[in-house]
Image (tube, rainbow, N blue to C red; front, top):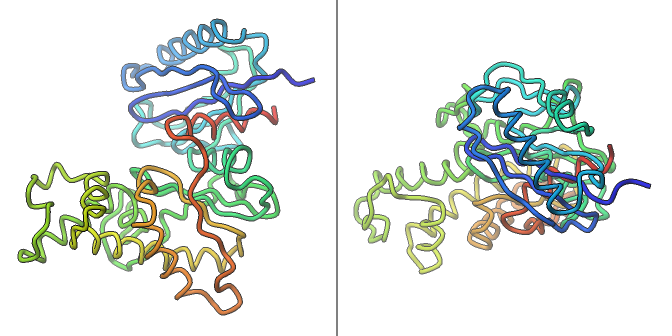
Amino acid sequence: MAKPYVIGIDLGGTNTAFGVVDKEGKVIASTSIKTQAYPDLNDYMKALSDAMKKLAKDSVGLDKINGIGVGAPNGNFYTGNIEHAANLPWKGIVPFSRMLSEKMGLPVSLTNDANAAAVGEATYGAARNMKDFIMITLGTGVGSGIYVGGKLVYGADGNAGELGHVIVRRNGRQCGCGNKGCLECYTSATGIVRTAREFLLNDTQTPTMLREISEKEITGLYLTECARKGDKMCLDIFNYTGTILGEALADFVKFSSPEAIILFGGLAKAGTLLSIPTEKAMNDNLMPVFKNKVKLLFSELSGADAAILGASALAWEL
């Protein structure tokens, strides 16, 4: 019989959050360490493993942990490596799973953060009992996890599913990946802020609360708050963003014919401000055979624990 708990790790550029999770998706205990505080990988591994052992011991006991799941930028499921992650302090190829497994004496499964979110949604969230769905993560960037026939699509080398870097505006905004016009440049939390700055530059007449703060202070959360108060420019910004996202989702539907597309991440918290224009644009651009068949849903993974839950779901198969 499998041990009753797993550990999920959400490895971010600023913080590494982790928690002990049971089979129902309840986070029993959690904590974090500062990723950037450990430029030396060996120091980081010692700090992480020490903190994880203490968390497990103080909550359920290390002997009851089945395994560890990790969601990380540029994480490769096949190799267990983190490969050339731009926002982490360790460059090149990092054999993360092997190193952590040796430290903890437990099996470790690793994938990229968007894939981890998709696995979490299939295990604990809105995609339970679905075999075909697409998870879109709308955070600092845009990621995705694609389920086809009940299995996550990894591709030949473990890097499949980079829908955030599908080009939606040819020769458009410069993206950090090196291309121009990627979906990420328009529908991420940073992308919508870029849109707001463009709107302010091109329209100096429309009254808006955005003019009450400096451009550097504009965030996705502030745009959401202003739009909910009826600010016309902010509403237009969400309509613009949702339209681009919906057009892209229509193309993704044609690829895999999913039962649902699930939105996850900070920008998804805008709710209907984003989903209404997105759903309209998606259905307006679908072939007749797909129209009104694909559900657009929000993640059901709970708040601050969502990324930990997603990562933890990987560990049940170990």
